[in-house]
Image (tube, rainbow, N blue to C red):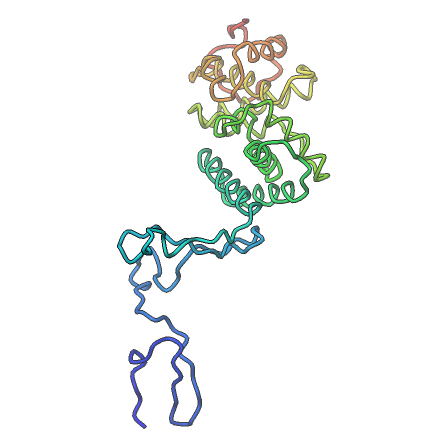
Length: 294
């Protein structure tokens, strides 16, 4: 028996070899060009299965017909979609899309999105936050996921990429922690310092000085009751004013998401001990006694 080229057969054909073995061709029914660096492999069609959805996300949508053959004699469409996706899956799918959109806006990695999706699924299936908007729950889950993955974001940062108020996100945050019996690590000034300084375009020396100032202020108990974000902002303001790369309170406040008055209040608490707060090797452009007193 002469060998027959495999291209003669379609997928699923049974081939008989010279030894009499039966071999089923499980290849694609068309030629693929995936080795030619194409953006998509035509042998794989449809979206990937989503394990978070109960229906497996295996649905088929039929578009509206345009030709005469698509309608019957009464003008009704011959081919119609059946609602195979449950309402709960549809709600979760919409929430997952919103989570992905919010994460993309603030450049969060895939592992944050996956953790957020899992948190939302747990909350949704427990039905412990009935009456709360899914968008608010999704925003709170994103905030929690960032904290748990060690890349915390402020409430204002999450609020800026969602359509939910800061107050509502905060409420959902507390309810979710209680419902899931989970917790998040306490945030510190160091969690935000690198990102804030980078967004302000400050050099490494100023960032290290601001980190040192904030940590020292907390150790000396100079800022009791102040949020880590406001302390970080005040430390950045002090370090920048002592360097050649000076930044205003407004510039820092816009990046940190805090008001100018909040920065001033924290700055006034640490200013009297400013000489003790700077690292020993810091190169001053403006001496400590010449720093703004506010």
